[in-house]
Image 1 (tube, rainbow, N blue to C red):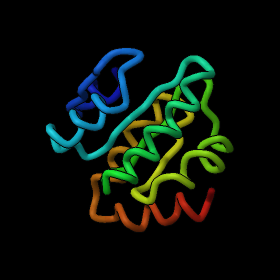
Image 2 (cartoon, rainbow, N blue to C red):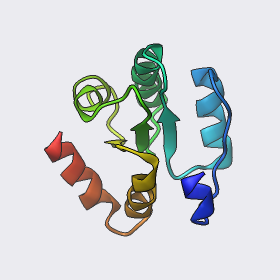
Image 3 (cartoon, rainbow, N blue to C red):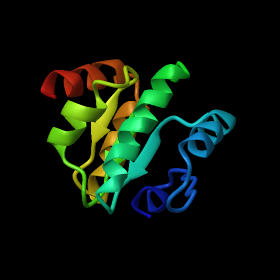
Image 4 (cartoon, rainbow, N blue to C red):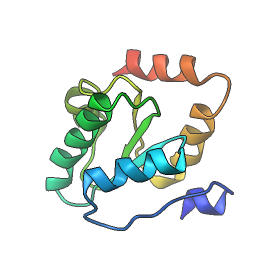
Length: 119
């Protein structure tokens, strides 16, 4: 909702969507960022799996992680180690615009490197 209200195109695929469908759609739509939100604990393992699959497929767009069950620590320890395309934990939706703006800017590489160093 926050991204949409700030003029970003958001493809909301709903809840409990299979990894394969998310990644196929990301490629089909040529997205700039893949965003995952986890509201229940099993979502954390699924986010790790999505990151692994993005790596296997050679994807390059950043992966944005957020939601009630997520944390910066979990993202750093479990998710960033699985995907080289950039993984960013977003504490809450209000900060998502800043993150998306940064990864769509000319400073994308520097921003992602700074995030990686922080983790």
